[in-house]
Image (tube, rainbow over all chains, first blue to last red; front, top):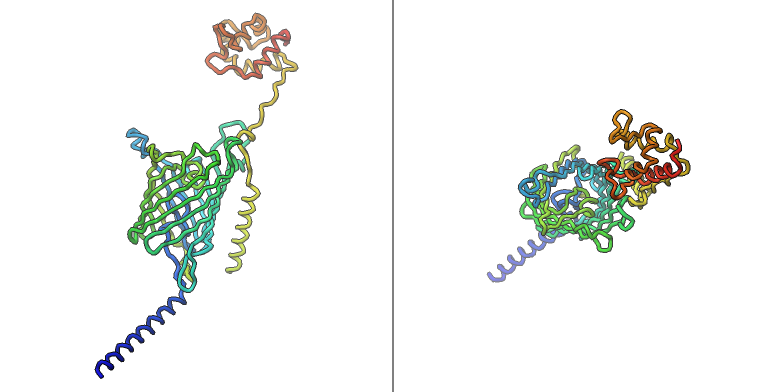
Length: 293
Length: 127
């Protein structure tokens, strides 16, 4: 009899637990859980990440590359030289951001849009990947040193990227970025105006505030770019309130897509390594609307 | 309000994409650089053709006031002398074995200027 009573009580508690668990599962199933913070900032290191500034948030981005580490003690291992980009980007909507910036590298201005098309999620709506499209225009404003006519459209270049990213749990994120760069002006008829590359980026979340990132851009062969190398960078990201600091080592001198994807000449094994940092400072200009609807 | 914002943004987007599409060019430096103009040596006279070359490259040393090396090129009468005795052509063409290469310390005259000086000398140094 006692055993039967115990069995009855036990079965009731199991049933009750199952009902609670089912209720919770139903609640979870009705809610969409989005992947948050696939990367800590809108840049993996040099290149674009899947992230956009939220609606109403202005990001000031300072990107600084020092000179090459192999430039010797006289140049203090590159600290005497610099290549800098100042830029701002703004979250116009939750899915649309725009930015503008200027680099000292060839005195280039750049302007861009980034469209967030898909967002990785689970729960009520399952989306395995995040997807965004990035497109920019750059203008080289160096003075001409030759006698040829100075056509404005000869100073323009364009870059379009398809950004695919996935966050694996709370630890690891991966991004693949097919890239198309179009340069209106190239040096010789043998050079290609259209250049294609494939970028890959990873992020390991060490803690809530620190992550380790890596980034590589592979130039497809047969594009007459034998004198250029693929861009490879590693960084440590530190998030502190409204700031994200990225300290990185890279073999690229330029700070915008056309420069570091198609214009990298440094070789890691030669010591052509540039130490640099990115500072992202976020200013909330208007209270952002909730992103998850 | 939201619809208006969306409309403005859509317009900006279409404008941006259209601007990109119509601004796509396929230039290279070689096809942008115009070919040099053809060298006209039909009629070459001291006053119209040769004196401007001397003024741009030679008069700084070979003026009446300075007369470096005894050579004066800023008047027709004086310029005729080295032109007719061969010194002028030997100097500007950097003839092998000739001790002077003119302009002194500078690059040789452009090929079109040399062709015009040669034509002037060969046609009897007309004024």
